Image (cartoon, rainbow, N blue to C red):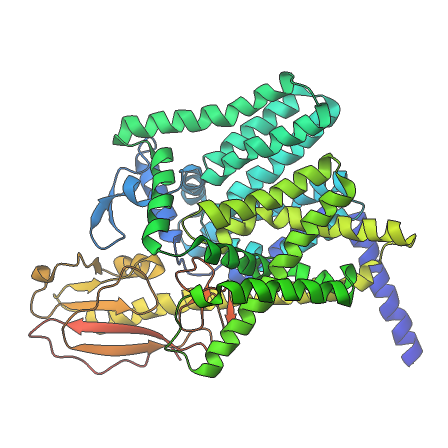
Amino acid sequence: MVESRIVSSGTLLGGIQGWVEAHPRWTLALAVVVLLAPFLAKPFNMDDPLFIWTARQIQAHPLNPYGFMLNWYGTDAPMWNVTQNPPLACYYMAAAGSVLGWDEIALHTAFLLPAIAVVLGTYRLARRFCERPLLAALATLFTPVFLVSSTTVMCDVLMLAFWVWAVVWWVEGIERDDFWLLAGAGVLAALASVTKYFGVCLVPLLAVYGWVNKRRVGLWMTSLIIPALALCAYQWATRTLYHHALVSDAVHYSGEIKGMMGGTQAVAILNTFTFAGGCLACVVFFAPWFWTPRALSVMAAVAGMLFFSQGALLKDYGWMTRPAHLWLEAQIIFWTFGGVLVAVLAAEDWWRQRNPGAWLLGLWVAGTFIFTGFFNWTVNGRSLLPMAPAVGILLARRFQTQAARKKAASPGLNRLLIPLGASAALSFLVAQADYLLASTVQDSALELREQYGQGAQTMWFEGHWGFQYYMEALGGRAYPMDPSVLQPGDTVSVPHNNSNLKYLNLPFVNYKFEGPEYLACMNLNVGAGFYSTVGGPLPFAFGRVPAERVMVYQASGQTAPPPGPGKK
């Protein structure tokens, strides 16, 4: 009886493996949907509202995407001065919203398509560079940075979809000497650039790949003019509309904010390694298959030296208890080790092969590292997302080169299930923590509306991100940092875990809302800053996560009601 069960179980697994190998694209598309389906109802949070409001504006005024005012930094300002992204993702959302509606499920469903496109594009590109394209695509999907980014409605995954398919068409066009494929790649690169400015980095990346292949100037190079022309056209259009060239403004903003934050370049480099290790954690799980214990010990020592050489320059987390502080530092060192693994994986692939694929993947990873650590206004997961497909392909190539050196067969799918499963589980937990934070923010707005929004008094609020989106939807108004606007009976709600806050010298009631308990993506108290190192030096952090707090200040004449129950 037991033996028959084992046989039938083996037959079932064999049947599943056979179907997966026979239908890899359907498998990947289905995997994306299954992983992201639990997050389709995720409330909007972080910078999601900026894209939604712009999409709404586009629906009413298609040729004037940023022609409205917004209080995002404490005072009203024109949207073109607030946003630092071009608007193509918002045009996509405007089209989707017109057809599907504007609620959370509708918009998240629309953004499933770019996520599927990234994974399928990675698979197609990997077929050119390795023997295990399915592994490369799954390794891309099962990363915290891809899964979390795919549960937002921001521009990052859409940009990456254009990016990956631009590379696919470029590689195929170079191999076939097909001008139309190359021109199509140039168009996709242009679309990537007007979705997120990082897309313009495709131009040098594709140029180097073309040069390494062709070793001569040719008609193929003219396709790279297309993204440059697109950005020039966008620069001219925004100057005409808003009397500001928004491409130049974005460059200036990054340098200005980076200077205001006051961090050193050395700390930014350390943060980049830490975030790369956590955001692309699949490399850590595969490390025992790639390197000997001795090599891993050397790389761990490098990570330790990186941390201890710059650890004193990190933020002072003096409010933490000593054990919590040590636990934070241990996580930083561990994920910095992961970042070293990512860098070594790319460097070793280039050193051993030095073929066009190695140049492409090596520069893809190196360019993303450099942009994030040296040029972006902050280190965050969204900036490191573009390297996920390259790292997935590098993982698959590593198995292939290792097997060739040892003259052995590449490991079967069964052996790869352990690291893939561990990476998938971690990625899902991180995405779940981000989902819980967004839900808690929405719940806090709903309860504050219940407590304070029933009368004639104004329900003001500070803070932005999802809190602003839901407070405004429920009748609240963004506080302009001017006490003279307050009338007797008015309230000002200030969420503790938010941005651009100013605490008031007024009586207040402290509300607590339970969110994620042991893992956070954005919480200064545990050092988590997936969306910006302003929140912490880790992309996500394990530890006891305190409840989300909202302080509700009462202007004179208001009788404070007892605190509500919060979210339990």
